[in-house]
Amino acid sequence: MTTHHAEFKLAPLQSKLPRVGTTIFTVMSALAAEKKAVNLGQGFPDFECDPILLDAVNDAMRSGHNQYPPMAGILPLREAIAKKIHDLYQCNYDPVTEITVTAGGTQGILTAVLCCVHAGEEVIVIEPAYDSYVPAIEMANAKPVFVQMEINEQGYVIPWDRVAAAVTPKTRLIMVNSPHNPTGSVMRESDVKKLAEIVRGTQILILSDEVYEHMVFDDKRHESLCRYPELVARTFVVSSFGKTYHVTGWKVGFVAAPAILSAEFRRVHQFNVFTVNTPVQHGLTTYMHNPSPYLELAHFYQKKRDMFRAGLANTRFKLLPSNGTYFQCADYSAISDLTEAEFCTWLTTEIGVAAIPISAFYQEPRESGIVRFCFAKQEKTLQTALERLAKL
Ligand code: GLN
Image (cartoon, rainbow, N blue to C red; front, top):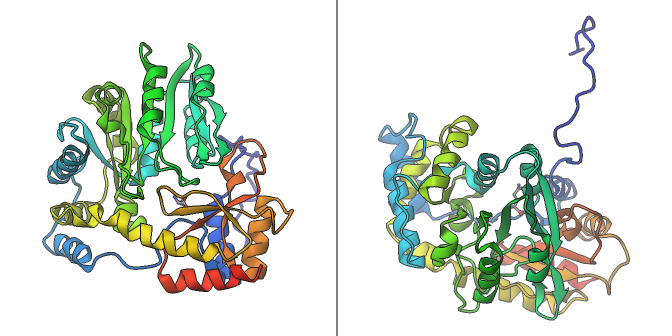
């Protein structure tokens, strides 16, 4: 069957994102499925969410919560989010004007960038960086300015002096992410203080990607920027229910920001997605009444991290710290000279374990000999992967 129309020849499109292909997560998941490899690549749990949450969403659907919700999200959910932020970080957001429910963290990030960054302005991106940040900046016709994290015995650290040096009169936004994908590093209070020093006295805004907020290990606290009133005033805080409640496919998150920022955020949001599906919002509202699931999440994932690290210690991978998220980075330079992307393809195809190359999180080619594994998996999945990796 021919699908083209012979009478009309379309000229090649000028891409808005010429450097972008299919995301590495999709590519590696497809390869893992094709090769029947254990998929420790794309970050998602291979276990079910709490049946109580499923019941709550089902009940919402059956009770007729199936039409458009308010543009910013249903108020009871925004109130539950505001309460959680208050209880955890002692910060008061007005649920009416300062919390917006989004179609996942990625939409929150895109909408935040689009609503405040203008053509020709600069956005500081700390690399390695989650792969949606730069396309979001490019869609705003703005310029990403990169600062690379350094790797030392503490793992990946942010060189704040280099972030400060990257600021120019055109800097509109700094994007930070803690707990950090892909490195598993977390910002400590000293990091936040340095960030505060950099922006003090400027009009620079901050986008704080905190989608892994409930996965900080070893009894450390999550340094949400919500804890710092000086920063709250200029920050979009992005979070995600998908990570917290093991429902990445539901694509629901939220953005908290002062009213002046949220008003601009909503102007874009209403024409970006308009709003987010209703029954899931009702289900989440019911489920959030019990704080235990998110309060216990760090412990839940720390056990998986410890089990996975103990297993990797018996391989030739060299482990980097994993202080948060559900990711573990590992140096494979004792095993192979391949590039990270080649190594991940080989590992998936020949060894039967999929991982993500850290090079995918850099704009310019950069090889560190490090790959990312996701340990949000059942113990038996991790065991199978470890048995295969131990043969290397
Ligand atoms: N956040 C997930 C990860 O880092 C992937 C999300 C996606 O596939 N776009 O693996």
